[in-house]
Amino acid sequence: MDSLAAAPGTGPATSPLPVLRKSRPAAQFKDLPTDRTLVMGILNVTPDSFSDGGKHATADTAIAAGLRMFYAGADIIDVGGESTRPGAAEVGAEEEQQRVVPVIQALVKAGALVSIDTTHAATAAAALDAGAAIINDVSGLSMEPEMAGLVARSKAPYILTHRRGNAVTMDSLAEYGNVADEVAAELAGVREKLYAAGVAPEQIILDPGLGFSKNEEQNWELLQRLDVLQAMGHKVLVAASRKRFLGSLLTVAGKAAPPAERDAATAAVTAISAYRGAWAVRVHDVGPSLDAVKTAARMIPALPAAAGHG
Ligand code: PMM
Image (tube, rainbow, N blue to C red; front, side, top):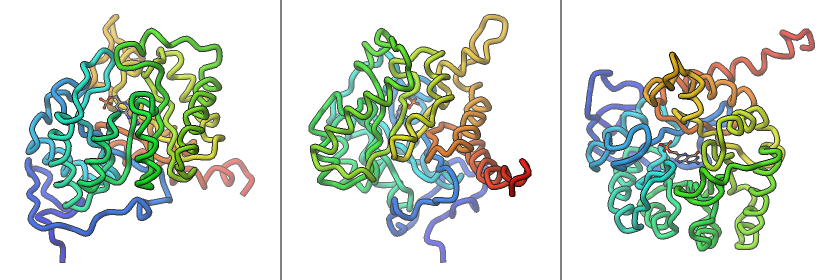
């Protein structure tokens, strides 16, 4: 019998605060679905993230939001305690851990698979201790190179994101000849450091780092040329959700769409990325992207027949 107040997909749609009664067995990375692209829900436990900052600023509201995403069907919940938006202030690792650890513990207890969005090795270690299964480091090892040793020792999957500079400097570093090739080459350089530290190839998940030291045109080019990253032989994560380049695309009367009005475009990026074989998408609004990945999975085998080859 189900040990939770509300099992995935069965909770009353109107319940604002899902209640956790008993724990479930810990979810495992190896048990994630493999027949479709995965949906990672974004849970920022921060006062200042660009699209949901302040919404989940306390542990209780963050846990409730995370449980809602889990019950809505998110495969992974990505918990972060430091905003990564351009120009955001850095948060100390201790404060970051105070924000994320109780949230991770509660979500893991509920049976969710959790990733920790951090550039700090100490926070990644504390998150793994609290039950997180994946390390998501938007700095691509550049903030704390000791992260590589932790990834090797823990054997945890590691999301290697492309970014030049840090949250303050990255916008000024968006100069590329061929953005997809250069991003791939720079990721390959960091990958060498991971290998040197003893990280196994199958632990590595690549992320083009949309919006991190890329302008709008470059973000679109990276999405168009996802195959360049896929050719590197790892899983690929696409994280376009509500980003500025989607707001610009949806400009009406000279006004970019605000973050809350970018979810339909996000779901469209999800569908196309899934169709092109992305391993996962990282999104704020889980439901539409879940529908999109299921639709894409259903479309893929239909192609050869539709084209008269099958
Ligand atoms: N973007 C943000 C935060 N974390 N993690 C990965 N792997 N890739 C990203 O592009 C990424 C990320 C930006 O902020 P948000 O949490 O508000 O989306």
